Amino acid sequence: MSNGLELRTLQQMLEAQGLDMSALTDPGAQYGYGAGTPYGFMFQPFDVAGYEESAQALLGLEESLMSGIEEQFGAGGRRVRGGLQTELQKIQEMGRPSGLVGGARQRLASQARRGASQSYEELLGKTQQQRISTQEQLGRQAAQLEGSFTSFLGDTVTRYLQLLQADPNEPGPGALSAPLMPQGAMGINLPDFSNMNFDFSNIDFSNYDFGGNQSG
Amino acid sequence: MATFSQLLGTLQAEQQLGQKLTQGVLGEEVFKSESMIKEGDRLYQEAAQQAGLDIGEYQQKGKEIDTATTLLAAAVPAAAPLIALGGFFGKKSRSKPKFRFDLEKAVPGFENRLFAKQRGEDLMSSVEGTRANVSRALESSLLSDVLGVGLSLYGSYQLGKGFGTIPSATADEAGASFLDFLKGDINDV
Image 1 (cartoon, chains in turn brown, yellow):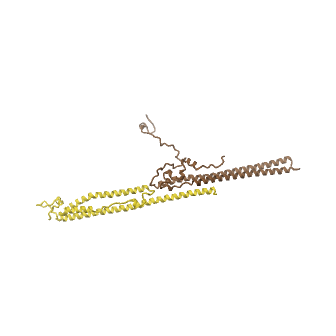
Image 2 (cartoon, each protein chain N blue to C red):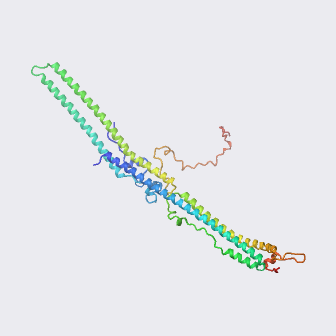
Image 3 (cartoon, helix red, strand yellow):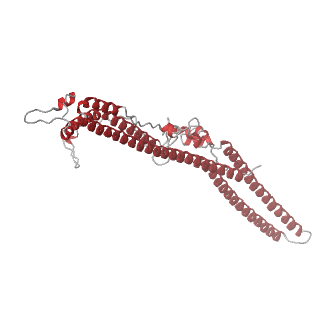
């Protein structure tokens, strides 16, 4: 099982979408409506600093929560060991000077060890449960944080479409140079045939039976 | 120090606010552009209607001049050529109606509006079409003026014959021809 939160950087997420940092700082530019155009103010830049601060805070939170769990586990282990030691000592003392005989003492010690081992198992299980639940919680929070990035990209596309719908007086010079759909979304990974020149002019269709049979 | 939840909440809230604000600005600009188109269209309709009325008035004045020319030339056939000439120049002196409509002057900022490009182009095309129609109507009125003078002279000739100001043909005399009338070569009856 992997330990630690895997939080992607903005740069990595942008690269995955085939974009660069300008998609966040000047989002309209990818559609030809950048900050220098009269339409630039209709696109709001992404709060890169706020995002990075949040990411740092999340990593800090992870460290704090995980180390808390480890500390609790360590303390619990120490308690179990201490308890066992105390109990073994008591059993030892019960044998002197004319107390328990060897067999009974060993049986009690063995019982104490089994109890301690069970407590330790329980502690281990509880700790593992805590680790999983904390990691899940951190994962949800990381997804929320990364979601703010993807929702920003989505909002930018929506804004561009709203702008087109309003029939802008000046078409953006670079309009449609950027993908409308994120990478991996339906259709975006289709092969690009735009550079292939298919020439059908030399094909003689006269011998083709479009009913299904080819003759000649 | 702010917690992660606080920072994330702020980031999301700011993002939503920014989106709403820019959406508001977009809506406002679209509304402004639409208003400009509506205002331009309203003013264009008014100007086109006025141009139509002016052309009607111009043509009405021409008809009045034609009628006066016909009646005068019939009453005084000897002066018919001069009266016809006066009628022609009278028609030419009418002030020509013009369709002067500049969208940018009528609606300041029209050309620099951000949206409704197609509707703006449609409106400009309508304005240009009306301008072309008005100037075509005035171009054809020159030919109509010349024809009007000819017809009114012929009408005067016929009317003069009816009134008896122009001698009609009898068994003894040939009477005045339309050419004689045009020359002003009429002997008063």
